[in-house]
Image 1 (cartoon, rainbow, N blue to C red):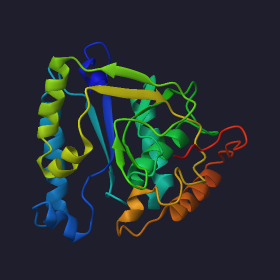
Image 2: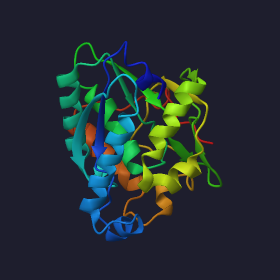
Image 3: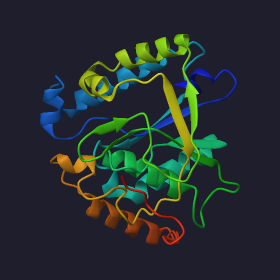
Length: 250
């Protein structure tokens, strides 16, 4: 939100990998829609309404066309479309989700941004890769607004009363996501950091701490990592030196 609010000085684009609507009919009907297509259209309307709350115009939007909960099944395609956005928009900074096991699509976004800026086909010079906070599961508590520990330094931006009010108005536009938003507890600050050198071939958290494994989404972290390993091999991106860069688990 802080960065969107500052777009009067910076050109901002938003690329979202998925349409926000799982293909399981249960998700659509539970949210009050007749089918996933109607749910996806509502999610897009909510996003547009939220961005209209910004006082200095809306950022460019790139809809990348994946189905919700399914990006991990097409990581090479995800890398290709993210790289296409980078080549089109030519940003100096790319901001993405952390790799924390909260949602498989969030982890896929972290992977796609990293892989799009790495390997033989990486843009030169590559943009800086930064992260915003998302949410992660400790096994007992769902944390939002802060990161799993890493060696990377964090930057905390405190929201003014005016900016916080805009953020709250934007969040109210996502009526289909009200239950989730209320559970995540909106903070008065926002945190960012350089993306750590993740080892995507390994789960991001200890057993029992992968939040999406609590749901019947047909994907576990072991399978997710197998997909990542296959994609990294296909992209000719070398493994991270795990002796030098360790995964940090709570």
